[in-house]
Image (cartoon, rainbow, N blue to C red):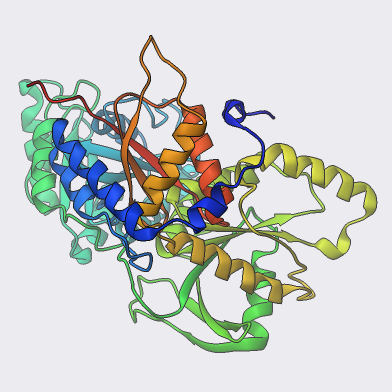
Length: 502
C-alpha cells in the first residue's frame, strides 16, 4: 500500500553521513538560535517546560508521567458508559440497552480543567444473570487494582441493591478515594432518592444525570481535588530487570512460552510487592540476563466467565501493558493473522510500549502456508514493519534465545534520545530537500524541534501551520532510516504557534 508520504521520496541520499560528520558544537549553536527565535511567537505555559527540557545529552531518559486513572464501576444498566461519554465530552463508549455489549476499548484519555487522566470503563462486560453479583464484584476488584480513584455508580431510581452492597464492602477495604454517584437524578424533585444512598456508608452521594449532564462538572471538580498528578498505580520504576509482557490471543502459546522459559531457567518466583492485589511476576533468566515477565494471566485467576471474555482479555492486556516496558506479541503462524492479532498490536502502540513480534509454531509451517503468511504480514502488519520479528516454537523451546537480542534492541530504541542540535539539523536538511506542500497559499514551516521524552521517543515540532499526516509520516520514516528506532513507536506532536502581534 503506497502511503502519501512516499511523494517526498527522493531516493537514497547521504543525509545519515552528513549528520554523522556534522560539527556538533555548530549544530548546538544553530539550535540555540532557532530556540531563541521562538520568543517572537505566542507560546503557552507548558511550551516553556518542553523547551527547557531540550538537551544535548543522548543518555538522558525522560518520559511522560503515567496519567492518573479513574475507574468507573457499578451494576449493569446504571449508566456507566453514559457517564464515561459525558466525562469525555464525546460518544466513545458503547451505550446500548442490552447488557453484555462487549467491546475492545476499556481505557479512554480524558481532560477536565487542563488536567489529563485515564478513564477505565468496566461497563462493557456483563455476565449471565446467575453470576451477576460475583462478576460485578470481580470487575470492581480489577478496576480498583488499576485505579487511583474509583467512581461507584448506583441507579438512584432503583436504590441500593444486594449487588451494590457487595461492591461497597470491597470498596471500603481498598483505601482508594471512592465517589458514590447517584445517577439518573434528572431534576431537583429526584434529589431525595439520591440522599437515601447515604446509608451505603460511602459518604455523600453525588447526584448526577449522565444523560443530561446535570451535576457531572461538579463531580469532576471534586475528583480533581483528590486525583494525584501522576498515577500511583502505573508507577515508573527505575532499575531492576526490564519488564516484559507476553501478549496474544487465546491458545496462541503464551503459557507454553512462559512455562518453557520459567520451567527450565526459573530463578525466583515471588510475589514481588508482597500483597494479594499484585499479580505474581516471574523473574526469569534468558540469554544470561534476568528479565521480569509481568503476569498477564489475569489479576484474578478465579474469575472464569463464559460471557464477556473478550472484554476481560482486553482489560488484562491493558493491565499488563501498564506494568510492562516491552510487549512480545505472539502470533500463531499456522492460522491466518486475525483482526484480534492486529487489535492486540494496536493496544501496544496505543500504550506507547516497545514491541517485538514472535511468530510461534514455526516448526509446524509448510511451504504453502509460508507463502500466504508473508503476504498477510505485508498486508496486515505493514504499520509495524519496524518491529523486530523472531520465529520460535514455544512448545519445543526452539529459537527462544533469539527473543533476547530482539528485546534488547527494542528497549534500546525505546530509551533512545537524539540531541536537540542534531535533531534540528536533521529537520533543516529534511525540509530543504522536501518542503511541506503549500496549503491555501501558505507553507507551514517548522520553527524548532525537540525530543520531549523517551519511552517512547516523543518529538515536539513548533510550527507555523498544521503539518499534513503524510508529512509527519515522512518525518517519522526518515527518523527511522537514520537512527533505527527498531522496535519502538515514535510520537511526533505539533504545536502550531502564531507570530506575536507587535
